[in-house]
Image 1: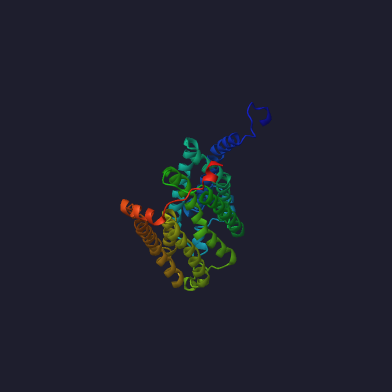
Image 2 (image 1 turned 120 degrees about the vertical axis):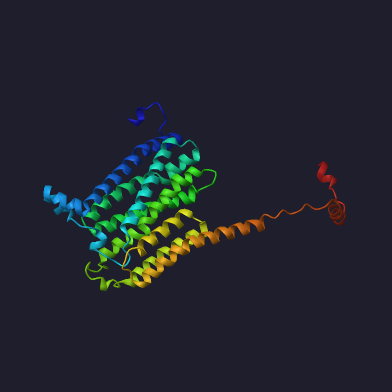
Length: 327
């Protein structure tokens, strides 16, 4: 089929154009499936809706096991606040909608390269994987959920690294920063900082029974290690790259953890401290860069003519090799 077209499909420019066309179709479709699946699964997790469905179709609630909330059935030391996570996911979806608009309206060659070769299919696959994760999460297949979140992490880390190395953000293209880099970075931090560790904790049994809050300190040091590790990584990124998106997202993730109680003291103290430290590190890093820029930006005055003449006299007359000059 492609060989019969009156164009050279082996040409790099033609291939990039066809890849962009594919992304313009596949990316909105995958996002729509992601949103629809998560919304349906969220409705299944609604207790009042589940009671209503149990009267109409008992099989539906039997399949979904009619959980009130996963975080209530499986409390853990790093369990986040579901409402704050929901707000964050909505923000990620809004960013991806902007990304899809940019896919259609992009005109600059650099922007098109970032869309095709920087993000490309990993975002499409990530949306499909997240849809599959939502189904596994509702069915309480936590091993499958953890595996899918691991795949999601690999896809998003790869896409963000390619963007950072080969298509770095620049102030000359602000829409690229707002609609490409920011949504991809925000999408990455949700499984990295909260969802993958929490799903792993449930899979490993690092939880306590819902009615036994006196056991909330179980596995507190494992939770402390996880929260400390991911936040130290985030702190390094914020301080070295002055990443505003990472700073805001990491602080929000930390707030989602400490806002859900009860929490062991080591975990609570860690996330509260980093909620403040991330913005503080961003401000300090920005001020440090500004001070260094002022020091390097001092203008050196040109030497005066008298000093230049004196240096010429000190050098002495230049000798010319006449034979070398005239051959």
